[in-house]
Length: 404
Ligand SMILES: *Cc1c(COP(=O)(O)O)cnc(C)c1O
Image 1 (cartoon, rainbow, N blue to C red):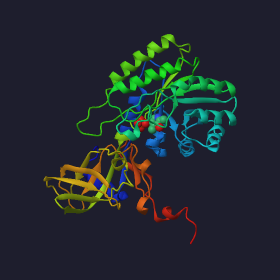
Image 2: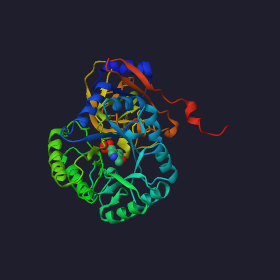
Image 3: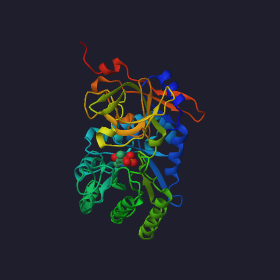
Image 4: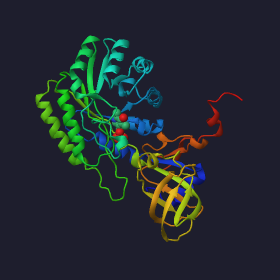
């Protein structure tokens, strides 16, 4: 929790609750960690912007010499809005309509397809064009089964045995395969699963001489739990370097660019979520701290049983501790931010600060229960806070409805 309790109260008084707060200095530091991962290699970092696509944050990421991955035409749109030129955007499609593909092609954004059927569609609408293919190397990783995005039980990527069919389609439509990519899953804190995934991808790369880039995917983890150790970037870098050296010794294009696609790693730690305590109650021996942090605001705990560190900023100076669950205001019993934790004893009017909320926080928020999505605030390098997205209003809720 990089802000003081006093600052948390000030921010809520100024902008309302709940509130996402980001720190520019921490965001820039995370960008540099990734940017400098492989100093001896030609490395480009693509930020997987689905983790957080606030245009002000995208601008900072762009300023740190980091490119972006888009998962949808909407992401291409918001990235261009933030100032990204087309050549720095990479559209990694999954089950994309021809209209969506066409949108990317017209915007001059490179498309990665992730099935033979999508490669065929791409060839039909853009014969002779440049394309990338996402492979599934047959190994996956992840913090929860829902975020393992390669291996034998997932919808993603082209199975590696289908290399001959990929070659046939490339030839049939006279396409130029400029790169191959993969993403094996989210949130690894040890180098090994990533290195294994990279090795498998490099085996596939050898089948395609002359590639301009090989994109090894994202998944770089941050410690959410107080007891987790940080990902050892030096160790990862050394291991990756060796594997890539071995590959380059055999590969024809010595200038091939290696890419990584960190999503979470870039904005997770710069973000906090702040909410207010409205009710504290005992319910059959369990203490519930009732807040405005429903899962419409932060969905990860409900979706993936994710752990987020929490801190109670107190109005008074008591230091009593209790075991309690911090819950939201949504009408579902799974609406729990922190389950049966040991924590500072909260009372009405205290504030809850949730750590590592910068990734998959606001970007997954919704209007469920007709709740308003929160505001977002950025603390700049000068320490001054400013609003970078206003809170929803009731008008936003009915914006797309027919008139009654
Ligand atoms: C989501 C995603 C990423 C980023 O995942 P993180 O775990 O947030 O690093 C990278 N590549 C692709 C294709 C993705 O879908």
